[in-house]
Image (cartoon, rainbow over all chains, first blue to last red; front, top):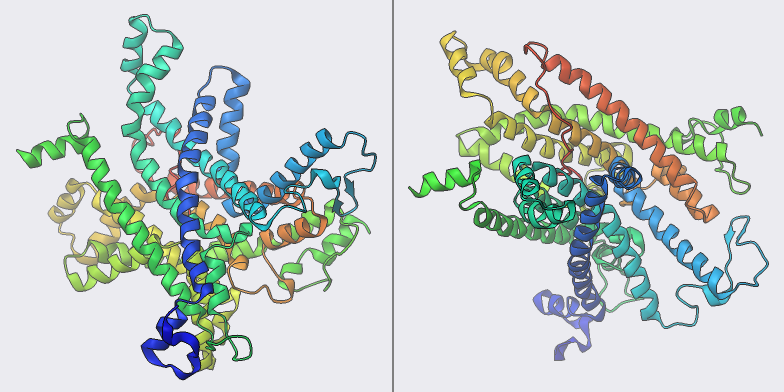
Length: 294
Length: 269
């Protein structure tokens, strides 16, 4: 990166460090922080959407739909999330390949499961064996995003389900008295009012989501954990211009500090948001604010 | 090979007792059930010990966080912030590499680099921080009248805490603490995926489920088995904590009626 970096073995101290921290591999490490932020930016709305669908299904009057919604919430919550991640990465991949296999190769006569192998016709491979590297990476990342949305959707569904029940019954009855039908009550009365009740749970969920991002590593994405292990490991002079001992501890300390800062900032922002939302509400929080101002 | 033989061979495999080699071909359903079940021993081991030891540290931390003296309060606040603000997964990694470095300097600390002790220490500190926050919240909600009545009866110091404040604190914290216990057991599955090595393939339930999924390339059998085991464990935990809850509330005229309260997912790592 810098001019003086051509022969690192002659450098020491800060000059060496400035060269070491700007190698191409470190650049990839810094970019992977972007991967984490991108995952959060995509997953959070997706999970909220899934949660909304799940919660609406759970409180549906149609029995199979309500059983499906409640089952979704209960199963995802009852099982360790990491098991879900490991499961869905393979299951989704095989599901996609199986569907492509059925549509693309209808006259393939061999069984798909042969002993311990899962074989589809070459045209049905997802992504295709011939596609460039970035397609594979995007495919892996999309599966990760979908898995995150599915798991955290269940948690969001649980929060929203509780929030929908917290909306005062009298509000809905009034709407009925005005002659609104079920759909109108849901969209015009229930949904606008539930957010205040949902926000504490949702902000909690946001924190949980931040703290779940390192699990990307288990899904085979080259994220910050991957790079911290890679870069921190002992390097001998044969393979690199920057030999050093086992520094993984320091790399993970850095990640720890990064996450602490991230959750702290989120906490402050969410607190502000909550204050803004409770302003003037007929709740304990709103009452406390009114008294403090008076 | 009958299922009983499989049970004899692999029932305690996660502890290193029985057949040395894991099955490599012709996986049977029985083998998957037995081995994953055998791995559950580790999940229960980590969960029970961390929960039990963490309980005491959490009580202490909650009290120091509520203390007026900043020398007591600040360390407790920082401890809780560090362990609740960062992912458990990163904590495991950091602790493992920290223990590896410590081992170079103090050989006596070698046992900490094994999952048996090292991961247990991390889980213990982590659950202590989460539980301390719950207990602190409960401590703040102990009714003022209770403490005034205790003062009027001449209680003070340790007896006042032990007989008046502590039982009420536990009673108020218990539903949230039950949640914390459930999520702690779920968190134990992270251990063998976060640096700590599974020596001689002695792993936990998820380790074996992952082994089968990798070998058979069929996730639809081992993971549902794992899910079944965990749902059973969760139900057992809820039952057990429910009994304790009943005992904590036994003096109340009628157990306070709680509707189906949704479990708040705030304690997942």
